Length: 178
Ligand SMILES: CC(C)(COP(=O)(O)OP(=O)(O)OC[C@H]1O[C@@H](n2cnc3c(N)ncnc32)[C@H](O)[C@@H]1OP(=O)(O)O)[C@@H](O)C(=O)NCCC(=O)NCCS
Image (tube, rainbow, N blue to C red; front, side, top):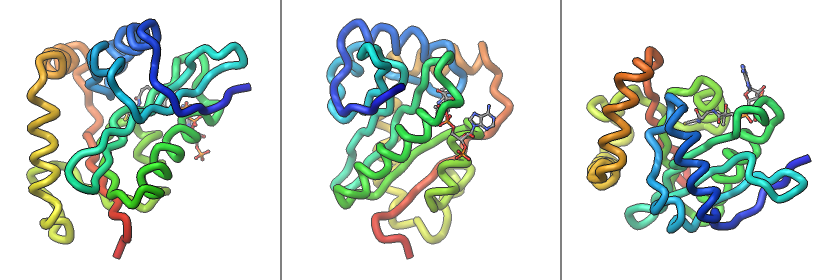
């Protein structure tokens, strides 16, 4: 049995997340320091309080939230934990009146993105006409996100290690769609 708690991660959990996420193809990831400092985290815990999954929300701009990480430890996958974490992360942003942004190449996450009514597009260079107004804020966020040594290193390493075939999907859900 697992439960979802909003709390920061401990230094040991931060270390574990960095190590395990380095082995997954779909998340570029965050450094240990970023994990230790991050505030808006949902942790799935087992009955002993051990971390078995996590989602991370990052606010940017005036009214945007990125679902930055969704991760469930391998032996606990396929039990509904990822979906509970993703929906909880999404609902947190919507409840605070924020637009939601996320990126994924993981087919399970893309399915959830579609279920939740996000608009999707395949490249930051082909921003949909309906979202041209949001382009500046997303570009600004992406540049800031990229200006980080850990991330650049991981992007390059993962590109060569995993040689990902699946395309990344960019997804936006405005607070008031339509
Ligand atoms: C993506 C991830 C978080 C999913 O977590 P999970 O706990 O295994 O997912 P859930 O059990 O909640 O399943 C969510 C949905 O996917 C479906 N699903 C789960 N595993 C599946 C599989 N192997 N094949 C097909 N469908 C699957 C479930 O049936 C469920 O569908 P539903 O909405 O119809 O009920 C997990 O696989 C993971 O951490 N992967 C590595 C990190 C990663 O890629 N994260 C995403 C980066 S954007």
